[in-house]
Image (cartoon, rainbow, N blue to C red):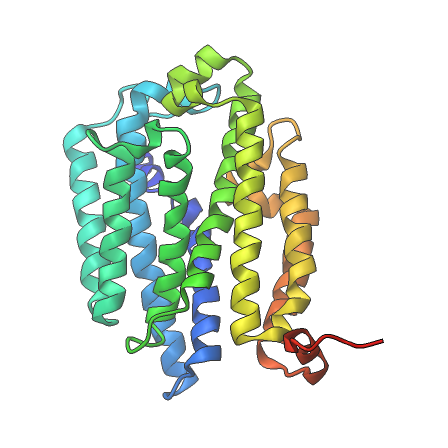
Length: 309
């Protein structure tokens, strides 16, 4: 039973905290009319739903990847790779997790339910033939990191079902996730150290090089910051204070990819990187502060007048 619980990766649930920036953006732009105690209750239900759907995706991910994971230095030790698990029980586990997640999401609202369903469908597209987008270079990163954008939408929609979030911040969040995923791919590729073995483990690695992975990560980071900049100019100029910290975060994460057995291969373990953890706390504090304060002096960046000499 412990192996089947591990298959759902409850240790990865921390990733679902990425829904809450969407909540903050919704509170900033739309507001909340009820009590904050009620909002906290909805937040807990929303987090639970997202964890269930994410776990359903993890279940089919590990089960369908078993024949490829045997070529990975550490994943080859998983019980699912060593043929010690029942396919029928795995299928039942997937069905129960998906049903519980979708059923509970109906308690929130319809847009939230649709996004949870979308998250579940992305798991199918990413893992299941004939789609299996994880086997196609660049599409593998973009199709997995779109889950970041979906999480942002989930955080937004449990606050309001009446408005859509600005497309710039949704796309920026998506491409920020693509940067993280491309760096993860780079660290995996570099750790395996042999292109042919890497391609046996992950088919898309046959189409990548270390250079192409780094260039793509750089591209995703620039696009993410560009889109976030548009959002800042249109909706909340005080968030300019966060931009230098975001640039630093991208660089910090980039730096981690070069470490031996880098933690970026297992993002759920990043809490062990004390320097990164402290940096994230500072970034979160600056972000929350910038969301809820007003700095009139920063409005000079919105002025289109040219200064005469």
